[in-house]
Length: 349
Image 1 (cartoon, rainbow, N blue to C red):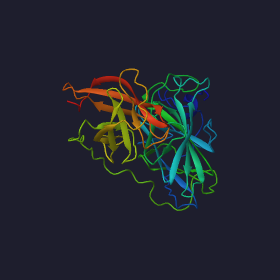
Image 2 (cartoon, helix red, strand yellow; image 1 turned 90 degrees about the vertical axis):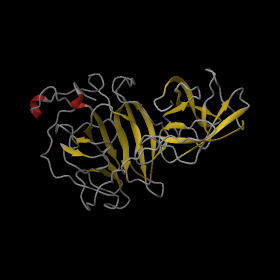
Image 3 (spheres, helix red, strand yellow; image 1 turned 135 degrees about the vertical axis):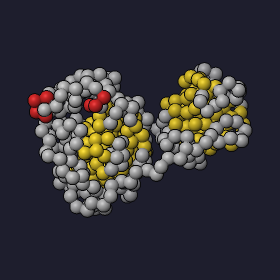
Image 4 (cartoon, helix red, strand yellow; image 1 turned 120 degrees about the vertical axis):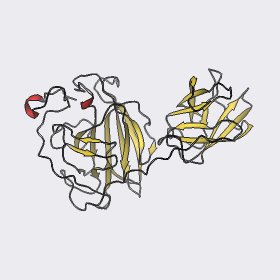
């Protein structure tokens, strides 16, 4: 992304730094769109509570495009905010992930995550592109649903790729492609899921027109679920939105036996799920390697790339020890959580 100056065009103080010098059109009332507004179209919602083109100089009329979108804009939220895919698509898939800045080093400006938005018949309505993402929670080829967390926002080091000097300028560079239009005016505050764009309906490039029903509804209020108890061994805390009623197994001892869990519909956090302890049994498949003396947790009902994130497992030592795993391995073609480290778990005591 190109370095640019903002102070003489926008009359902004130097501390309010964004990414492209341009003059935005006067603010207009927020437009709202829905999947019914144009045949076969999909609404893309705001990825978090934040602001569309906060300073009026990084909007869709002339903001630079680097991911191949029809248009682009910066959407703003503070550091550490979860970045979610919100849309009315029947399904979605991560097509690719790579470093945002030239040179291929994500430490300079984070990751670009490209998402295909699919209709009910499996055809692609369009694509959404999220740039400057930190700590990716998904992988290329992974099928994702509405509300899936892609990663979080971060203030990256200032450079020609990311010209930001303080937290006010922290943003995601967003692009949409596929006969797309944008739904809102610059300097508009939006809630998570509010209509941001529309793709796949044959719209002309510009502000969306047509029917204006309410945008993508926000998720219902979160009700945390307590840790399941009463099983033959502790439940697992799977820190991603895995499907319910899916088996997880782990070999124990010399590898001749294994423990089996079943994922549930709820967890202690909006983007996590409990896996309830079910039963021990003789090992039924490959255990995987245990270089640290701890066998991996294997998602037996999922294929490679369908699960990512972290897992917490309480030890039965009476000390509150929690084993922490990262899902970045593969066993027998299934995603596997590999042991990383142990810590004192807040809910393991």
